[in-house]
Structure formats: structure tokens, C-alpha cells
Amino acid sequence: MPGETSVLFRRLAACRPARVGGLVSWGLAKIFCARVYGARMSSISIIGAGTMAGILGTRALAGGNTVEVIGRDAAKAADLASDLGGGATAAATGAAPAGDIVILAVPYASVAPVVSHYGDALAGKVIVDISNPFNPSATGLDTPDGTSIAQEIAKAAPASAHVVKAFNTIFGHVLAQGRPLDVFIAGDDA
Ligand SMILES: NC(=O)c1ccc[n+]([C@@H]2O[C@H](COP(=O)([O-])OP(=O)(O)OC[C@H]3O[C@@H](n4cnc5c(N)ncnc54)[C@H](OP(=O)(O)O)[C@@H]3O)[C@@H](O)[C@H]2O)c1
Image: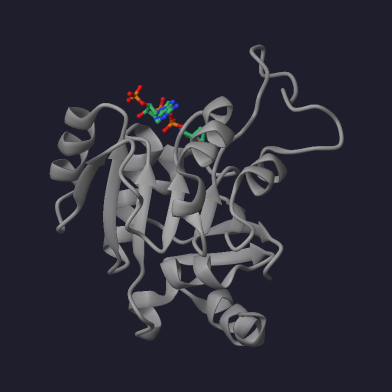
């Protein structure tokens, strides 16, 4: 919704608990602003049941959003949803994500395959890529020059999906503190 972007950018700039820099996605803006500005609550599906799934799930619930955890290990996803509380639900890999926003909280090598797996079930959704494609020695990126994980996602996703890069520059333990911080968000729908 490009027409709403400037308004949301101004809102986002003042928004607590997150002050946001970089390009802004309308879908992501709602994650941060739902409670502060009384905007419509977002439904968020998180694919993955690890560290970042727990941290982002906690923050999303604190912002008044609904959260669904989708894990390849159904028991692990159920445990995380239970730990999150706040009405969080769990589903096993294969279930179509219920959320309007789908956060990919999986290692970078799994990101594009997961998107391909869900295919048309992601049509029209905001897909959030939080991955960092570091090489094994963490001295550089594992992605070839001239491309990126987000670009690979965009190729694998339905044309109507909106791919957004966010949260990859923030350590999970910092995000977990729940303090105001800067989040860089990049996408083609800014
Ligand atoms: N940790 C951080 O501080 C941090 C900060 C910024 C960005 N990130 C990024 O966030 C992403 C997740 O990191 P994390 O620390 O949360 O990792 P993690 O704790 O290892 O969790 C990864 C999760 O992904 C799941 N998974 C892996 N492959 C999958 C597949 N093919 N299909 C479905 N689920 C799959 C794992 O399932 P199982 O539970 O079954 O193994 C696990 O639940 C990574 O891309 C990382 O670069 C991490």
C-alpha cells in the first residue's frame, strides 16, 4: 500500500518499542504500531521454533498481535507456543500459514526451500526474512555475488507476496531485552 507509506513512516519513526530506520514495509509497520496507534492487529505465523522464533514471538505478542508457531517438530512448536502464552498456537510443517505476515525463523539454507514448499499458500502475504547467510568461518557471506537470500525468496514466492528483510542485524539477546532499538527494514513495497 504505497499510498500509506509516508504516514506509516512518520508513525514508525516515533513508535515505541521500536524506532525504525531504512526502507519501510506497510506490513512490517503494523507489527510495531498495532498497539501504539490502535491499528488493526496483525496475525503472524513464525516458521521455525528456535531462538529467534521465541524472541520474535514474544515481541509480537507484546505488540498485541496473534502468533502461530509452525515447526517441523510438532512437539517443539507446541512447547514454544505454550511457553509464549498469549493465545499463541502451534502447527506442524505442511500446514498453510494462517498469518498475514510470515516470519522465516530458520537457517538461511532452509529459507528458500521453505518458501518453495509453501508455494501458493504464501500468496498475498508479507514474508519476513531474518536470515544471515554467513559462511562457516563467519568471515563472509555464503551467497554468490550479485544475489541475496531475499532475492532467492522473491523468486521462490508467489508474485503477489511481499518480501521484506528485517531483524537480521539485531542479536536475539538484544531484541529479547524489550528495550527501544533501531530495526532496519528493506523491501520493494516501501
Ligand atoms: N540468533 C540470533 O541472534 C539471530 C539474530 C538475527 C538473525 N538470526 C537469524 O535467524 C534465523 C534463525 O536463527 P535461530 O538463532 O533462531 O536458529 P535456531 O535456534 O537454530 O532455530 C532454527 C529453527 O529452524 C528450524 N528449521 C531448520 N530447518 C528447517 C526447515 N527446513 N524447515 C522448517 N524448520 C526448519 C529448526 O527446527 P528444529 O527445531 O526442528 O531443529 C529450528 O526450530 C537464522 O537465519 C539466523 O541467521 C539469528
